[in-house]
Length: 237
Image (cartoon, rainbow, N blue to C red; front, side, top):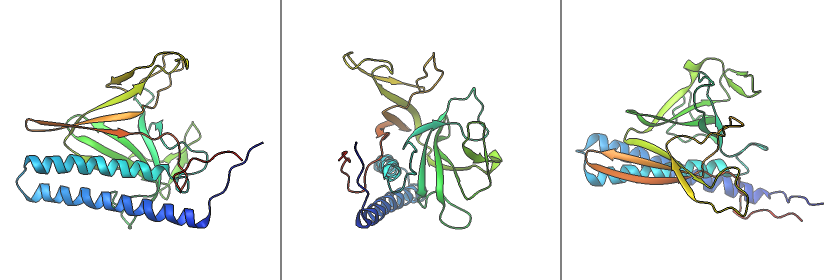
């Protein structure tokens, strides 16, 4: 029989402090770059800085979601869900949970907490976060999850209007055996299992940013497993 070692108070505090500082720094960088872009003539260097800022911000947000002290027990770091207002015919969105939201997600009464975020890409509009807080008025949906009562209460924050395409990267087939040869596959839509009608979470997202004649790509890892505060995988005793 095995059991997991609990985290010490020092590990918990370190995880909260370090994760918060990294996310704050990434958010500050993205806001600064966005303001500079708006106030100064657009240049290739500014475009590069924007793309790097977005990639850094997204990586920091997803790393914050992986911390075991921040992610609720029993929940996956990343899953696929349809926000309120999305029908069954709509593809689900990549969803994650944050105990504390970055300042970029503007809350009417201050800092948002207990936030559910969804990646949304819209052609012509770019990459955005759809999000809501558990402090808003919620109701249980038919799947047993709590969601907003009204889709108009769902917030939308634009992350990059220059994100022109998103591709999803999968390694091997979902039903492949351990001995099967696996290859990377890059697709435009989330992969759906025809038999189960369930969508598969990709390993990576490839974001393509476009400005004038310039194209830049960045790859964002989608973490599946939570990590411990000290960064070391727990082993059964």
